[in-house]
Length: 539
Image (cartoon, rainbow, N blue to C red; front, side, top):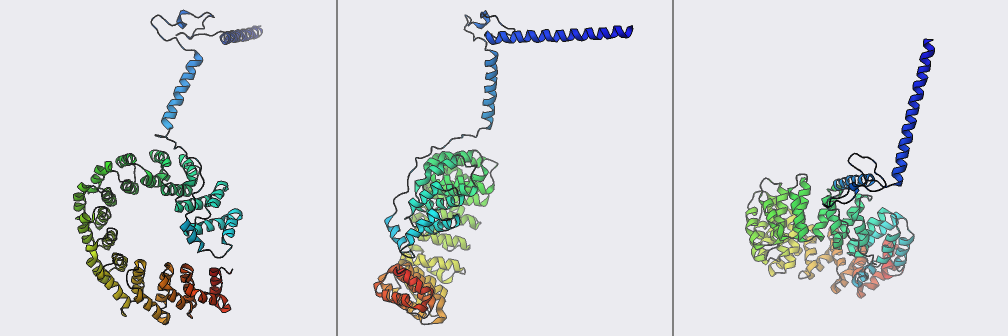
C-alpha cells in the first residue's frame, strides 16, 4: 500500500513540475511577442514598458538624454569593443600612398639606341629579341632582359612593358624592374606603389627590387608607404625602406628618421643604415643629432663614422671643427669617413685634410683621400699622388693614383705616366694600368702607347699586355686607332684578331674595313670569320 501511494505521489509531483515549466515558457513567449510588436524603453529595473511611452522615455525639462533600447545598447557596446580592438591592432600611421596613374615607357634616348644598334649580332637581332619577349620561356626571357639591361638598350621598352603587364612570373617581373631601374623610367610606378602599400604577399626579393626601382626613378608618391613600413617595425623591409627614404625622402622625413635613433630595439646594423640615410637626405635639422652621435665615444664606431660622413655631406661651415677633431682620433675607420664627409666642402677648407689623408698610415684612408683629391680636382695634391704612385707599399693605392694623375693633366703628372709606359723595367701589368689611365683622358702618351702596342704584337712574351691594350683601343672611337686596328687584324694570334674586330666594331674605321672583309672571307678563321660577318652585316 505504501509503495502504491509513493508511486502516485511521484507521478503527481512530475505532472506539477511539467505544468509549471510549460506555463513559464508560455509567459516568456507572450512577453517576447509583445516586445517585438511594441517599442519599449529600458528602465533601471529592466521591466517591459507599455505601448504608450512613459515619462522615462521622454526628454526631461532639464534636457537629459533618454535611455537607449537594449538593441542600441548592445550595438554600442559592440562598436566600442570593435573600435578598441582596431585601435590596438592597427599599424601606427597606417597611411596608404596614392597610386600614380598608369603610363607608358618614355621615348628611347636616340644616342643609346645608336649605341645599342652597334652591338647587334646581325640584321635580325631586333625581330629575334621581340619574338623571344613575346613567345619565349621564362629562362630565355630573363636572360635576354638582363642582357638588354647590361647593354643599356632602350629599344624594347614598350615590348618589355607589355610583357610586364601580362606575365605571372615573379622572376620576369624582377628582371623587368631591374631593366626600368637602369633606364630610370617611371612607367611602372603605379605597380611599385601598389605593392609597397601592401607587400606582404610578395617575395622579399621582389619587394627589394621595387625599393631599388622607386629610388632610381625618384618616386615621391611611394614615401607614405615606405614610412608606414618603417613605423610598423616591418623587420623584413626595414633596411630597404630606410635606404629608399634616403633617396626620395624630404628633410621632414629625415627628422622623423633621426628620432628612431632613440629606440632601444634597433640593431647596430640598423642604426648604421639609419645614420647613412640621414647623410643622403642632407637635412640640416638633423645636424645636432649627428654631431651628438659622432662625438659619443661609447657609440658603435661605424655609427660614429657614418655620422661624421653625414655631417660632411650637409656641409655647414660650423661643423668643420667637429670633423677636424674627429680626424685626430686613433681609429682609422673614423678618419676614413671624415675624409668621405669633408670632401663635400670647398677645396680650400678640405684640401689640408685630404693631403694629410694621402699620407695616412692606413691604406684605406689613403685610398679615400686619393678619391677625394680626384673629385675636388685638388692640384696641390699632385706631388703627393706621384710619390704614392711610385712608392706606396699597397698596389691598390698605386693603381688608384694613375687615373687621378692623368685626369689632372699637369706637365709633372704626364711626364711621370709616360715615363712608366716607356720604361723597359716596368712590368706589363703596371704599363697596362698606366696606359689605360692615359687613354681614358687622352691628354698625353698617344704615340708612346701606340709604339708599345706594336712591339707587343710582334713579341709573344708580352701577350697579356697585347690583349690589355687592345681592350683599351676597343673602348674608344678615335681616328688615330685605324692603323693599330689593321695591325691587330693582321696578327697570326687568333685572340689578337678577335680584339682587332672589337676595335673595328666600335670605330668602324674605313681604312680597316678591307682587313675585316679578309677575315670574313677566310674559312680558316673559325669563330673570327663568323664574328667578322656579323660586324659587316653579312649574316
